[in-house]
Image 1 (tube, rainbow, N blue to C red):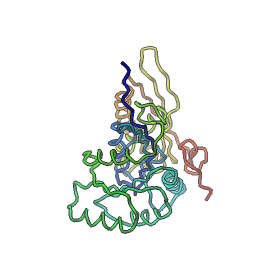
Image 2 (image 1 turned 60 degrees about the vertical axis):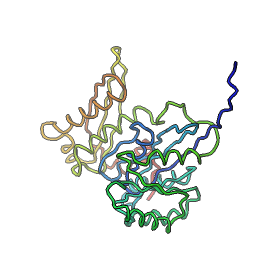
Image 3 (image 1 turned 180 degrees about the vertical axis):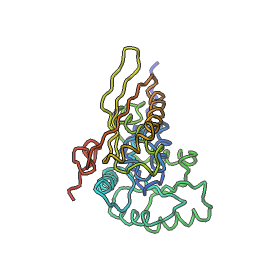
Image 4 (image 1 turned 90 degrees about the horizontal axis):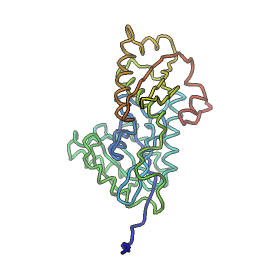
Length: 305
């Protein structure tokens, strides 16, 4: 006998995660999706483009936009990233504002809350890193933020520990628009695997070199070959702007580039579930930060000024 139980209507919506640099957006999107789709480092402005992470919550498909951190831009690349973040907010169904509870309402957070007046979509406040802040300070911070911007809900979470993340997901699931899913049920990101591979290597680059790494550096996957034995051969190029920066990435006797490559290879093998042969090269590309083609490849709009 056929099952005549009525099915709950499907829902699907886009949620933009916005916040100051290092507020924890990439960590949160990975927690919400339940899989690594965004790279995470202590370095500010790790996220450069709009990255989509996809999660299922009941009959709702939640498409999270991990946006670049919002701050006062100084360079052309900075301006492109901040513009991209606000574009993501204006295009989303719901805007989730992430604030580092430890940093509180610093200058970047204050400026972000003020500019939120221009965003008409429903907004939700998420205070992150609450596990390291006194409860009384959290309540005061939540009240202050709500006084400055109109939020439909407020959540207190620890993205690294996962505390409170499910509450956020369930709340969003009930408020995204009714409609068909945009992606297959088992898909966690719409990023091409070549892009993910480049991002993984860029993460290891940041983690290895920390403050020594030149801010204006990027990684591009040049070739991807599936081999007969089931493994994959990947060739990537790390681009920097000066010869002195190339020496930093290579390290003494090539030790830095070797460590970066090994860490990236291991993680890519885990993600792809196959053997990975990763070959890294470092090249100087002067002024790449002012090259419109590089911005298009990263999904950024090239600022004219």
